[in-house]
Image 1 (cartoon, rainbow, N blue to C red):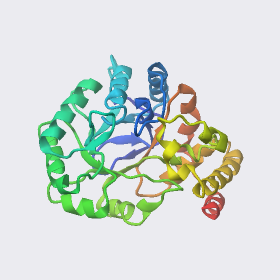
Image 2: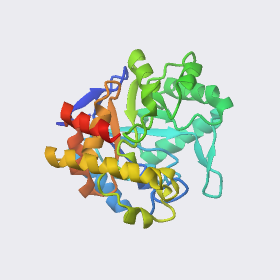
Image 3: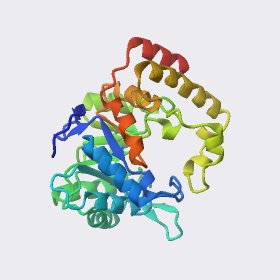
Length: 318
């Protein structure tokens, strides 16, 4: 693994030293049921290269993002690299044949998904393989046992989960240790503070959080006009957080972050990400980039230390 000047953290007990901010490749899958609208693959690759050039040392993707497209783009971006970043991906969401998601946690399906992801990514082993969602509930144990099997076979180096509750974690703990968890966490979604983050801190489980900028709501660039223009294949156009009565509250919070950002000489999105990293349970935050120009400003979050004054203003807004 190449050296980086960005601030790093150990990811739980995995031994992986990751930059505090990682590259999120969700949007690189393009549009679809849970997509982000049209995306140019060349811009995606250029964004990945820019992030790596600046020291980011991990990429988080999933087979479900564009049903393989995001993983293929990541694989193309890493082609020929002697020292590549860590690659994290996820399983359990399949195309049902009509472009919609089907949740599958059966052993054979998980094993097939891993093989397909390895081919698309062009790596000999996945650094962190995660169950994307704990659905169907009755198959969680079978799915987790399959993840443990993949690790034993050396096809993946570490295993974790995403979107699991504390109850789910307790159910699978006896099958194999849960090395990492990936919950949504931001100023507009603080549910992880109740159980997941305290549990992870107590058990030494690695935590990488997703959507720390509230899926774009806290970047300072989201306006009512922009939301009204979101393409139909951008999932946010159908999400309640982007409609009233929640929208006004979220935009007011973004305005407060803008004021702090102006004082600190950084974008509001970086302030939002830094807020998540302030939680002692959080090892890293996934930030989504679609174009190279988006990368530089947000990476300041990796080393941004929020002051007590900043926190007072942020909490007052929330």
